[in-house]
Image (cartoon, rainbow, N blue to C red):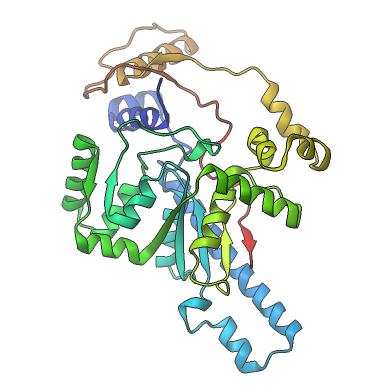
Length: 349
Protein backbone atom coordinates (compact mmCIF):
# COMPACT_ATOMS: atom_id res chain seq x y z
CA UNK A 1 0.00 0.00 0.00
CA UNK A 2 0.89 3.66 0.00
CA UNK A 3 0.00 6.79 1.93
CA UNK A 4 -0.42 10.54 1.62
CA UNK A 5 3.32 11.20 1.78
CA UNK A 6 3.94 8.97 -1.24
CA UNK A 7 1.23 10.70 -3.25
CA UNK A 8 2.40 14.19 -2.32
CA UNK A 9 5.98 13.35 -3.25
CA UNK A 10 4.85 12.30 -6.73
CA UNK A 11 2.78 15.45 -7.13
CA UNK A 12 5.78 17.60 -6.21
CA UNK A 13 8.01 15.83 -8.72
CA UNK A 14 5.45 16.35 -11.48
CA UNK A 15 5.15 20.04 -10.60
CA UNK A 16 8.93 20.33 -10.80
CA UNK A 17 8.83 19.05 -14.39
CA UNK A 18 8.11 22.36 -16.12
CA UNK A 19 7.32 20.78 -19.49
CA UNK A 20 4.88 18.30 -17.99
CA UNK A 21 3.28 20.94 -15.77
CA UNK A 22 2.72 23.31 -18.67
CA UNK A 23 1.45 20.63 -21.04
CA UNK A 24 -1.27 19.47 -18.65
CA UNK A 25 -1.91 22.78 -16.83
CA UNK A 26 -1.29 21.24 -13.44
CA UNK A 27 -2.68 23.05 -10.42
CA UNK A 28 -2.92 22.26 -6.72
CA UNK A 29 -5.73 23.11 -4.31
CA UNK A 30 -3.98 22.08 -1.11
CA UNK A 31 -1.29 24.08 0.63
CA UNK A 32 1.41 23.19 -1.88
CA UNK A 33 -0.17 26.16 -3.62
CA UNK A 34 1.01 29.43 -2.06
CA UNK A 35 -2.41 30.99 -2.78
CA UNK A 36 -3.92 28.63 -0.22
CA UNK A 37 -1.57 29.97 2.46
CA UNK A 38 -2.37 33.57 1.53
CA UNK A 39 -6.10 32.94 1.92
CA UNK A 40 -5.62 31.26 5.29
CA UNK A 41 -3.73 34.25 6.70
CA UNK A 42 -7.03 36.10 6.87
CA UNK A 43 -8.42 33.62 9.43
CA UNK A 44 -6.06 34.88 12.09
CA UNK A 45 -6.79 38.57 11.66
CA UNK A 46 -10.54 37.92 11.57
CA UNK A 47 -10.40 35.80 14.73
CA UNK A 48 -8.23 38.31 16.58
CA UNK A 49 -10.67 41.12 15.76
CA UNK A 50 -13.59 39.00 17.01
CA UNK A 51 -11.80 38.28 20.29
CA UNK A 52 -11.18 41.99 20.78
CA UNK A 53 -14.90 42.64 20.33
CA UNK A 54 -15.72 39.85 22.76
CA UNK A 55 -13.33 41.23 25.35
CA UNK A 56 -14.87 44.66 25.08
CA UNK A 57 -18.39 43.32 25.55
CA UNK A 58 -17.35 41.25 28.55
CA UNK A 59 -15.61 44.18 30.15
CA UNK A 60 -18.64 46.42 29.72
CA UNK A 61 -20.88 43.81 31.28
CA UNK A 62 -18.56 43.45 34.26
CA UNK A 63 -18.37 47.22 34.86
CA UNK A 64 -14.60 47.16 35.15
CA UNK A 65 -12.60 50.32 35.63
CA UNK A 66 -11.12 52.09 32.59
CA UNK A 67 -7.65 50.96 33.65
CA UNK A 68 -8.76 47.33 33.91
CA UNK A 69 -10.41 47.52 30.51
CA UNK A 70 -7.23 48.99 29.07
CA UNK A 71 -5.17 46.14 30.51
CA UNK A 72 -7.45 43.52 28.95
CA UNK A 73 -7.84 45.19 25.55
CA UNK A 74 -4.17 46.10 25.32
CA UNK A 75 -2.34 43.15 26.92
CA UNK A 76 0.84 43.94 28.76
CA UNK A 77 1.95 40.38 29.54
CA UNK A 78 2.26 37.15 27.59
CA UNK A 79 -0.52 35.63 29.69
CA UNK A 80 -3.00 38.15 28.26
CA UNK A 81 -2.08 37.65 24.61
CA UNK A 82 -4.24 35.65 22.22
CA UNK A 83 -3.00 32.17 21.31
CA UNK A 84 -3.99 30.03 18.32
CA UNK A 85 -4.16 26.23 18.30
CA UNK A 86 -4.03 24.70 14.83
CA UNK A 87 -4.59 21.04 13.93
CA UNK A 88 -1.98 20.27 11.31
CA UNK A 89 -0.33 17.57 9.29
CA UNK A 90 1.01 19.40 6.26
CA UNK A 91 1.95 22.55 8.24
CA UNK A 92 -0.04 24.81 5.91
CA UNK A 93 -2.68 26.44 8.09
CA UNK A 94 -0.29 27.07 10.97
CA UNK A 95 2.32 28.48 8.58
CA UNK A 96 -0.34 30.99 7.56
CA UNK A 97 -0.64 31.85 11.25
CA UNK A 98 3.10 32.45 11.44
CA UNK A 99 2.92 34.80 8.45
CA UNK A 100 -0.07 36.58 10.03
CA UNK A 101 1.93 37.10 13.21
CA UNK A 102 4.83 38.52 11.21
CA UNK A 103 2.37 40.90 9.53
CA UNK A 104 1.24 42.29 12.88
CA UNK A 105 -1.69 40.09 13.85
CA UNK A 106 -2.01 40.18 17.65
CA UNK A 107 -0.84 36.69 18.57
CA UNK A 108 0.93 35.57 21.72
CA UNK A 109 1.78 32.14 20.38
CA UNK A 110 0.99 29.28 18.02
CA UNK A 111 0.26 25.70 19.04
CA UNK A 112 1.13 22.95 16.56
CA UNK A 113 -1.52 20.29 17.25
CA UNK A 114 -0.75 16.85 15.83
CA UNK A 115 -2.12 13.33 16.14
CA UNK A 116 -0.03 10.20 16.75
CA UNK A 117 1.91 11.04 13.60
CA UNK A 118 4.01 13.39 15.65
CA UNK A 119 7.01 14.29 13.48
CA UNK A 120 6.25 17.99 13.97
CA UNK A 121 5.73 17.67 17.71
CA UNK A 122 9.03 15.82 18.09
CA UNK A 123 10.83 18.53 16.14
CA UNK A 124 9.61 21.32 18.42
CA UNK A 125 10.57 19.25 21.47
CA UNK A 126 13.99 17.97 20.34
CA UNK A 127 15.08 19.72 17.14
CA UNK A 128 15.10 16.38 15.31
CA UNK A 129 12.92 16.11 12.21
CA UNK A 130 12.73 12.39 11.51
CA UNK A 131 10.27 10.26 9.61
CA UNK A 132 9.35 6.90 11.20
CA UNK A 133 10.61 3.94 9.22
CA UNK A 134 7.12 2.44 9.11
CA UNK A 135 5.60 5.65 7.73
CA UNK A 136 2.33 7.20 8.85
CA UNK A 137 0.01 5.48 11.33
CA UNK A 138 -3.70 5.42 10.34
CA UNK A 139 -5.79 7.36 12.86
CA UNK A 140 -9.29 8.73 13.40
CA UNK A 141 -8.00 12.05 12.01
CA UNK A 142 -6.93 10.85 8.54
CA UNK A 143 -6.14 14.25 7.07
CA UNK A 144 -3.33 14.54 9.59
CA UNK A 145 -1.80 11.13 8.87
CA UNK A 146 1.28 12.73 7.35
CA UNK A 147 4.98 12.28 8.08
CA UNK A 148 6.46 14.69 5.53
CA UNK A 149 4.90 18.14 5.95
CA UNK A 150 5.39 19.98 2.69
CA UNK A 151 5.09 23.47 4.18
CA UNK A 152 7.53 22.78 6.97
CA UNK A 153 10.39 23.47 4.56
CA UNK A 154 9.10 27.03 4.20
CA UNK A 155 9.15 27.44 7.97
CA UNK A 156 12.67 25.99 8.21
CA UNK A 157 13.81 28.50 5.60
CA UNK A 158 12.59 31.40 7.73
CA UNK A 159 14.01 29.92 10.95
CA UNK A 160 17.35 29.70 9.12
CA UNK A 161 16.98 33.47 8.69
CA UNK A 162 16.13 32.99 5.01
CA UNK A 163 19.37 31.13 4.36
CA UNK A 164 18.46 29.12 1.27
CA UNK A 165 21.71 27.14 1.25
CA UNK A 166 21.27 25.95 4.84
CA UNK A 167 17.62 25.09 4.27
CA UNK A 168 18.45 23.16 1.10
CA UNK A 169 21.15 21.17 2.91
CA UNK A 170 18.84 20.24 5.78
CA UNK A 171 16.06 19.13 3.45
CA UNK A 172 18.57 17.18 1.35
CA UNK A 173 19.68 15.38 4.52
CA UNK A 174 16.05 14.57 5.24
CA UNK A 175 15.47 13.32 1.69
CA UNK A 176 18.55 11.12 1.77
CA UNK A 177 18.41 9.77 5.33
CA UNK A 178 14.85 10.36 6.56
CA UNK A 179 15.92 12.87 9.21
CA UNK A 180 17.84 16.02 10.04
CA UNK A 181 18.93 17.65 13.29
CA UNK A 182 18.43 21.40 13.36
CA UNK A 183 21.38 23.57 14.39
CA UNK A 184 20.80 25.04 17.83
CA UNK A 185 20.27 28.61 16.62
CA UNK A 186 17.63 27.48 14.12
CA UNK A 187 15.97 25.28 16.74
CA UNK A 188 15.78 28.12 19.27
CA UNK A 189 14.18 30.40 16.69
CA UNK A 190 11.62 27.73 15.83
CA UNK A 191 10.72 27.22 19.50
CA UNK A 192 10.28 30.96 19.95
CA UNK A 193 7.49 30.91 17.37
CA UNK A 194 5.47 27.86 18.38
CA UNK A 195 4.95 25.00 20.81
CA UNK A 196 3.64 21.57 19.85
CA UNK A 197 1.53 18.74 21.19
CA UNK A 198 0.61 15.22 20.10
CA UNK A 199 -2.91 13.92 20.84
CA UNK A 200 -3.57 10.18 20.96
CA UNK A 201 -6.89 8.50 20.25
CA UNK A 202 -8.11 8.41 23.85
CA UNK A 203 -7.57 12.17 24.30
CA UNK A 204 -9.21 12.85 20.96
CA UNK A 205 -12.33 10.85 21.85
CA UNK A 206 -12.50 12.30 25.36
CA UNK A 207 -12.37 15.83 23.91
CA UNK A 208 -15.23 15.19 21.49
CA UNK A 209 -17.29 13.66 24.31
CA UNK A 210 -16.55 16.47 26.79
CA UNK A 211 -17.52 19.30 24.48
CA UNK A 212 -20.67 17.55 23.26
CA UNK A 213 -21.83 16.83 26.80
CA UNK A 214 -21.09 20.35 28.02
CA UNK A 215 -21.95 22.50 25.00
CA UNK A 216 -23.87 20.29 22.52
CA UNK A 217 -21.19 21.18 19.96
CA UNK A 218 -19.89 18.22 17.97
CA UNK A 219 -16.21 18.49 17.11
CA UNK A 220 -14.80 16.62 14.16
CA UNK A 221 -11.74 14.53 15.10
CA UNK A 222 -9.22 16.96 13.57
CA UNK A 223 -10.66 20.01 15.33
CA UNK A 224 -10.81 18.02 18.57
CA UNK A 225 -7.03 17.62 18.38
CA UNK A 226 -6.67 21.39 18.14
CA UNK A 227 -8.95 21.94 21.13
CA UNK A 228 -7.19 19.31 23.25
CA UNK A 229 -3.75 20.70 22.45
CA UNK A 230 -4.82 24.30 22.91
CA UNK A 231 -6.23 23.77 26.37
CA UNK A 232 -3.11 21.84 27.36
CA UNK A 233 -0.43 24.06 25.87
CA UNK A 234 -1.67 27.63 26.34
CA UNK A 235 0.35 29.41 29.05
CA UNK A 236 -2.54 29.85 31.47
CA UNK A 237 -6.27 29.28 31.86
CA UNK A 238 -6.64 33.05 31.53
CA UNK A 239 -4.99 33.02 28.09
CA UNK A 240 -7.57 33.66 25.34
CA UNK A 241 -7.52 30.75 22.91
CA UNK A 242 -8.70 30.34 19.32
CA UNK A 243 -8.88 26.82 17.92
CA UNK A 244 -9.13 26.62 14.15
CA UNK A 245 -11.83 24.24 12.92
CA UNK A 246 -11.14 21.81 10.09
CA UNK A 247 -14.23 20.05 8.86
CA UNK A 248 -17.84 19.11 9.62
CA UNK A 249 -18.28 16.25 12.05
CA UNK A 250 -20.75 14.53 9.71
CA UNK A 251 -17.83 13.56 7.47
CA UNK A 252 -16.49 11.36 10.29
CA UNK A 253 -19.47 9.48 11.76
CA UNK A 254 -17.40 6.52 12.94
CA UNK A 255 -15.10 8.69 15.03
CA UNK A 256 -17.97 10.68 16.53
CA UNK A 257 -19.93 7.51 17.30
CA UNK A 258 -16.89 6.07 19.03
CA UNK A 259 -16.68 9.20 21.19
CA UNK A 260 -20.30 9.81 22.17
CA UNK A 261 -21.94 6.47 21.34
CA UNK A 262 -23.78 5.35 18.24
CA UNK A 263 -27.23 5.74 19.81
CA UNK A 264 -26.45 9.28 20.96
CA UNK A 265 -25.19 10.21 17.52
CA UNK A 266 -28.28 8.83 15.82
CA UNK A 267 -30.83 10.22 18.30
CA UNK A 268 -29.33 13.44 19.65
CA UNK A 269 -27.28 14.86 16.80
CA UNK A 270 -29.13 16.30 13.77
CA UNK A 271 -28.56 14.32 10.60
CA UNK A 272 -26.62 16.39 8.10
CA UNK A 273 -28.23 14.70 5.10
CA UNK A 274 -26.48 16.72 2.35
CA UNK A 275 -23.16 15.50 3.74
CA UNK A 276 -24.06 11.99 4.86
CA UNK A 277 -25.64 11.23 1.48
CA UNK A 278 -22.26 11.85 -0.13
CA UNK A 279 -20.80 8.96 1.88
CA UNK A 280 -23.13 6.52 0.11
CA UNK A 281 -22.23 7.57 -3.43
CA UNK A 282 -19.96 5.40 -5.57
CA UNK A 283 -16.28 6.25 -5.22
CA UNK A 284 -14.29 6.87 -8.37
CA UNK A 285 -10.62 6.09 -8.28
CA UNK A 286 -7.87 4.56 -10.33
CA UNK A 287 -5.18 2.33 -8.85
CA UNK A 288 -1.66 2.73 -10.29
CA UNK A 289 1.85 1.81 -9.23
CA UNK A 290 3.42 4.08 -6.63
CA UNK A 291 5.87 5.66 -9.06
CA UNK A 292 6.26 8.99 -10.79
CA UNK A 293 6.23 7.47 -14.27
CA UNK A 294 3.08 5.44 -13.58
CA UNK A 295 1.16 8.52 -12.46
CA UNK A 296 2.55 10.54 -15.36
CA UNK A 297 1.46 7.76 -17.73
CA UNK A 298 -2.03 7.83 -16.27
CA UNK A 299 -2.32 11.60 -16.64
CA UNK A 300 -1.02 11.50 -20.22
CA UNK A 301 -3.45 8.72 -21.13
CA UNK A 302 -6.46 10.35 -19.45
CA UNK A 303 -5.84 13.76 -20.99
CA UNK A 304 -5.23 12.25 -24.43
CA UNK A 305 -8.50 10.31 -24.26
CA UNK A 306 -10.40 13.41 -23.26
CA UNK A 307 -8.99 15.28 -26.21
CA UNK A 308 -9.28 12.41 -28.65
CA UNK A 309 -5.53 12.00 -29.12
CA UNK A 310 -3.04 9.21 -28.75
CA UNK A 311 -2.66 7.49 -25.40
CA UNK A 312 1.11 7.20 -25.37
CA UNK A 313 3.40 9.86 -23.94
CA UNK A 314 6.92 11.03 -24.43
CA UNK A 315 9.55 11.60 -21.75
CA UNK A 316 7.11 11.38 -18.87
CA UNK A 317 9.58 11.74 -16.05
CA UNK A 318 13.29 12.57 -15.92
CA UNK A 319 13.75 12.19 -12.16
CA UNK A 320 14.59 9.23 -9.96
CA UNK A 321 11.61 7.35 -8.63
CA UNK A 322 10.87 5.70 -5.29
CA UNK A 323 10.46 1.89 -5.17
CA UNK A 324 7.33 0.70 -6.97
CA UNK A 325 4.34 0.14 -4.74
CA UNK A 326 0.65 0.63 -5.36
CA UNK A 327 -1.16 3.85 -4.58
CA UNK A 328 -4.55 5.33 -5.12
CA UNK A 329 -4.54 8.54 -7.06
CA UNK A 330 -7.50 9.92 -5.15
CA UNK A 331 -7.98 9.94 -1.41
CA UNK A 332 -10.98 8.22 0.12
CA UNK A 333 -10.58 9.43 3.68
CA UNK A 334 -13.25 12.08 3.35
CA UNK A 335 -11.16 15.08 4.32
CA UNK A 336 -8.36 17.19 2.97
CA UNK A 337 -6.33 19.79 4.78
CA UNK A 338 -8.18 22.26 7.03
CA UNK A 339 -10.57 24.02 4.70
CA UNK A 340 -11.70 27.60 4.38
CA UNK A 341 -15.36 26.53 4.41
CA UNK A 342 -15.69 27.09 8.13
CA UNK A 343 -14.69 30.19 10.09
CA UNK A 344 -12.38 29.79 13.09
CA UNK A 345 -14.11 28.75 16.30
CA UNK A 346 -13.41 31.01 19.26
CA UNK A 347 -12.98 29.17 22.53
CA UNK A 348 -12.70 31.05 25.82
CA UNK A 349 -12.12 29.00 28.95
